[in-house]
Amino acid sequence: MSLTPTKTIYEAITYHPNTEDKEATIKKLVAGVEIQKKVPGFVSIVLEGNKREVPGESVRLIEWDSYEAHMDGFRNSPEFVEFKKVREGSTVGESEMAHYRFFRALPKIPPVIEWVTIQLKQDTKFEDYFREWDKALDGVRKAVGCTGIEVGQQVEDPTKALQIQGWETLENHTIDFKEKQADVAEVMKELTVIVNKYVEGGWKGCKGVHVLKTEPGHGA
Image (cartoon, rainbow, N blue to C red; front, side, top):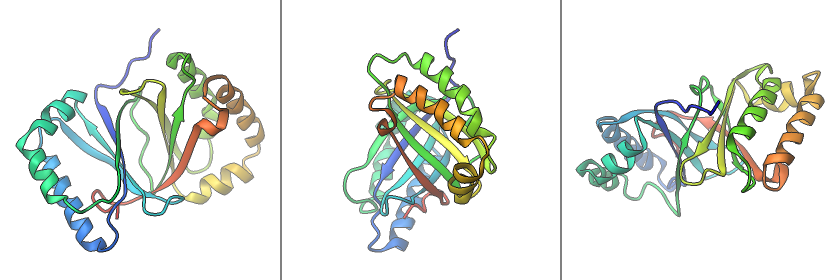
């Protein structure tokens, strides 16, 4: 049986907020959010936050009715022109954007999110990877403070995946799971087998950071 994605799609953005004047940057980003909220096809900003391990880098995850609603509708609309205008100067350097399809509803978004980008081997069948990986992740889902884990497949490059993993606190992951969970060694052993089988470069192909959640538009 093939995987069935959820009806909506997610736009994942990595950006570098202008921190010279954080108050001004937040004002611009929030103004942009307010414009997006009125656009047909926009559902919600699911997550925004700062990468704890990469100072100066933030992420945003936006839910849209469809890929077309974002790329054909919003980005070709007068609202997009206004959106870019009000946000001018709010970011520095290059931003990255891609779309992902998930196969179940995303977990509750708590204060801390593990944001993991995954580069699969070119010959990996995503469905095979997903089914084995998803089952093995049950060993992490039962951890203290874990609010859920879901893995999405990128639309632009189907060999890339994004894992969204919720934690109530940073310590739930770094201490309660990694140091205190009785079967953590067995869980990691099972995950490692699957990573080596399907991921380019093994664990090196999994790039994870902790995202500290903010209000929408407050990623500076």
